[in-house]
Length: 327
Image (tube, rainbow, N blue to C red; front, side):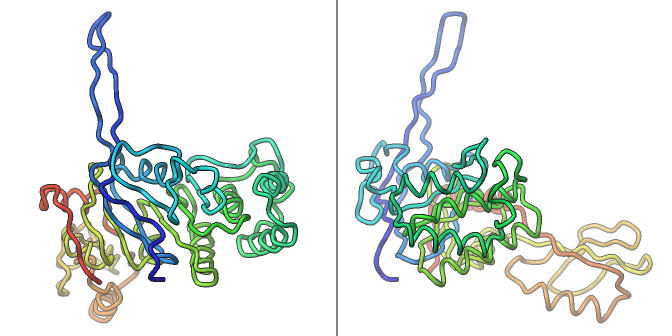
């Protein structure tokens, strides 16, 4: 667990962008997608890598896989330079892009797996063992003969995750793996990833906008914005730095004065329904227990803070300077 598996030192990625400024004129400018990014990930760690749209998350993943070449800095995965030895590295990594698929669209799911069996030259016994395990844990048995184009988003996502793991990768990059999934599908994917990390020690780098993915899977979170590392530490520290708040939506039996339960504060009242904001690092269970004990409760729900709002606060407060919180 102490072995550094992923290492970035001052990594940059700059794109040349051209846009039309007149009938025959074009303007060229540079866009810095990743700016002096440095961090390490030990072998076997699960790390959440989050930030608003356009922050540089997907660009980082593409550099880690060798799809993109850094404009500057040093990058190594398992001691390998991804852009120079992409084929060699491919046998050691698995990648899942939430809005793209590595499966063959018109083929049954099992045929995609058979093709990957040959592409990665996976030993027959190991391929069968990995396939059986993924089919069981991701509940794919009834889907193997179904063409990929006929699968729902949740089914296809589970199929993509299985495909990424058939060759026993040492690290798994997940780019929005639960985007658009229903609650049941999300739960299945999260449980599978948790077991994968625990049983096989697979290193996981997870990018997502869903904080519940991070809360349930990762002990460490990194925040990137404008291509720079804003925060690296535990999730609780992120909430504190970003001063984020969760919302407790309470439905009472009848209309009552604003609920008075510390540390929450009422931010909105509509008839018998009240919205209470409370610090995201505080326990929701204790707050719910007090409300249920002191007020005539019909129903309630907890809404997570919007990650983009949290990061926007951090960015404004930190003026672009990275912060480090030691767990």
